[in-house]
Length: 431
Image: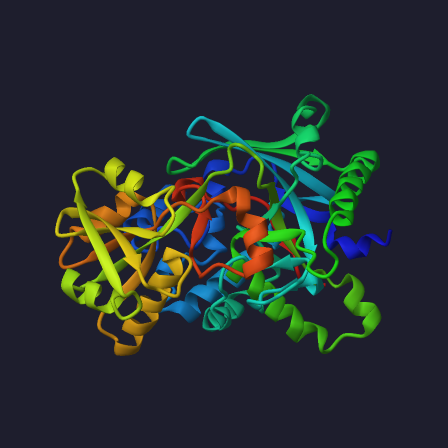
């Protein structure tokens, strides 16, 4: 088999050299804690003047703030400074096995490069690598401003495979004593623990490619979903958009191996028991409960609202049932809501229709929130509405994407905010 068909390859991966404080180096994905600026203020204090991915990534809490252009220039300049100062050690032509332990559970991933020519983020895509949630095109240009001049990429992208036989990643987790451990660190801000193991022996790389060939052979070639986005879809979409620009000025031969054609990601098996899907909730700022219900009823014939006393009761009321359910938090009270007479299949789809309508009227601000507790906490501040969405069933995840297309944007995430991927590895994306 021509392995380029698989859309995956080993990569030249950069890691901080010995002597760099990895706990200060690794910071959480930039799209986390967007309604909690105090988190990022604390990160900056913790990092101080030491080398850190905080200096070479763009926390999205600052994306709409003044000084964006200066921050981007500083990111690019700091990347170049780190490279000139030689703070990186390069591991050539390798994969890295990642073990992330958080809240008592360990999940495993594989750092690898994906071919952006095999990726299409459109809703009805049938590409080998594809988005699982709606891609908001207007979110790509500001992210391109960050990436287009950057010499490095630092991924928080997590990509899922459906490997029920556990043939790609899991064999290596039973052979850790045979692999070289290349990093081992605690993660700041309750991020748990992170370890990385080098996979660079040819026979081990062959095992990985062979396992992917077997997975590929089982796919429906008219709709061959091998890699489904877990986290970081807009980052991968940005990489794709940048590559489309770059390749216009390249020959066919140059396109084959240009580093910007590929994106470094962490691949995880959806069957990993420690891989938890968490719904992403919604917060409507400065919106009354009555106005919210009025808006929802434009898209649902009727709402059945039940007041509940505890968060646990609320979660039980909205999960595991046929129908369209969601939780509502307002004024310190909790409600389980069932919507009937709607064209939507998912609660997230109904909420997105409401969000789109309210945005057109510009009557409130909306944010996407990780964690039930944070959603409820924010709903107690002023006249805010917190919407708690039901769980996503990961056992039918791939089947749903294949049959229905992508989920609405920000439907799910992998784990709580503190469990998200922390920046550790880097890769050169310029020649």
